Image (cartoon, rainbow, N blue to C red; front, side, top):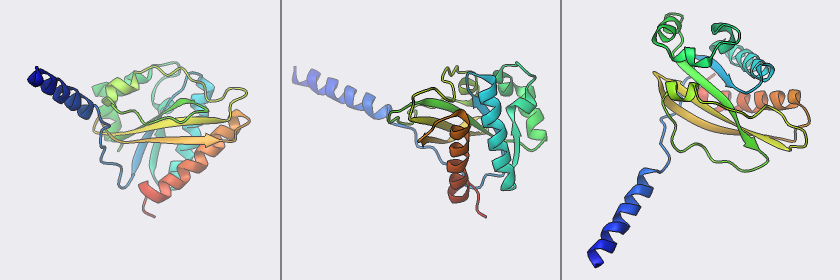
Length: 185
């Protein structure tokens, strides 16, 4: 009986340990990126992708918005096809940043099990960029290189009153992130 309890405890311990968060290597020097907004509304996706594209370009980072790559109304899952990947690689893109709203007004933790690019780019995200009577929005950024996740970050934007304020504060926080960690100027 003792052996059974011991084996059960060992099994539970190993299961919990194996479900710990992934240690991702991180982005060292960001030179190119395709920005993919995973937002429910097209206008929210457009606002986020265009503003982030402009921010990255201001640092000399080669950037493209998924809206410039995929036909209007098209599925972002098309970015995961081999033909699209090869086409973008020929244009100099090998890094993809998925950005989505994780939630509102609470403390959130990073995803502990980030899937490969094909899985995550086709995942559905139902949160809009802004809702009335919320105080903060938490975004999740997942950066992929060679189809595998290299960085996962949460960015919390607080004291918001409109959709435009959310985008402006997100850009401001990402600006600090780029200068501090992703682009050695």
